[in-house]
Image 1 (tube, rainbow, N blue to C red):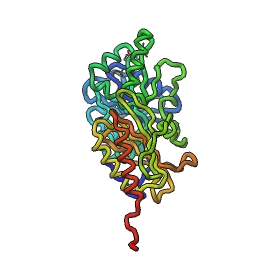
Image 2 (cartoon, rainbow, N blue to C red):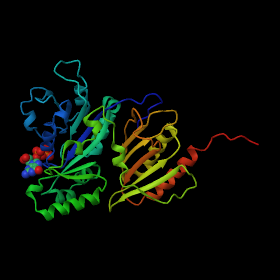
Image 3 (spheres, protein in one colour):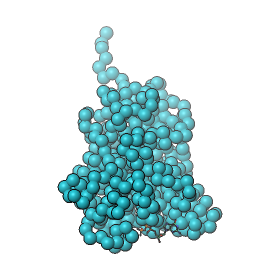
Image 4 (cartoon, rainbow, N blue to C red):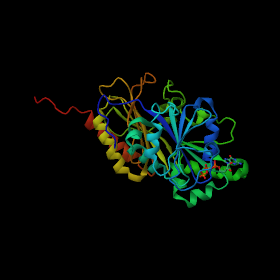
Length: 358
Ligand SMILES: Nc1nc2c(ncn2[C@@H]2O[C@H](COP(=O)(O)OP(=O)(O)OP(=O)(O)O)[C@@H](O)[C@H]2O)c(=O)[nH]1
């Protein structure tokens, strides 16, 4: 858990996690996105967990543990020790051949559990302090994906935690099989955006956020997170509390919690921790923008399962809407429970602690 005391909300470097089952096309996708000049100052860490020798074409002549690629990107072998890799990447400035980078892409091994990789990143002092998760991008093989999702827990977890699901090798699969895979993926994770890798409309700005591509851009993830929100009846008396239900599939549901009044950060942080413990494995993601009492800037919160990322202060609110909006994504029928927890939290937090006695 991360506690960020008042005044210590830092600006962070965005990183995206590229995951996907063995041979599903992670490296091919990575090579493709890195060809784009907008990503020329990207650091890349390849986390193979020491298992498989690397033969990726852009690192084939690996003379060292950090390689500056022709396009200005940098590649770093993470091996078993992601923390050591982060330390090497953050050494730019000390070594002339390590450029300053603006973002990081971490490619996991095909058998990785993305939750553990994210946990390792945030447990690292550098990662926990300076990195900010942009997207979890998961490649799924159109030919073998259905079978892999059925047989391998890792493949299912990679799909479930994704923001983007990129279906590769559709050119090698029957159309009906691709449709069946798309349908299954919607059931596993209806919140992720699905793309066929070879879709001409797929561009890097469909994969990464504008903020990831250009640090001067405003992080626009909020509108995406809360898209398609449908109001649910509010069952508590507290006028500040709302829960909006916005998607529900067989395996994953999501709900948006809304508060009109500014919130006490410490209380919210403790409440989020309680929710993580209460929901356990059923909680997939939490993403939100929070109006924190005493802060003119909005604070972005982001959690992947049990991992709560360092909160980040945005430079300004994206629009006139100053409400706190937090999206919970989970498995199971928990919308009403969540609604009740949120209503209780708001009624306790927003209630004055000391009331004058007559
Ligand atoms: N036809 C076709 N082949 C693809 C596509 N994407 C990837 N491949 C091929 O699939 C094979 C595996 O791709 P990689 O990018 O190495 O997959 P990976 O997920 O990085 O593999 P590991 O790191 O071993 O888990 C390679 O031969 C790629 O050329 C695609 O969309 N269409």
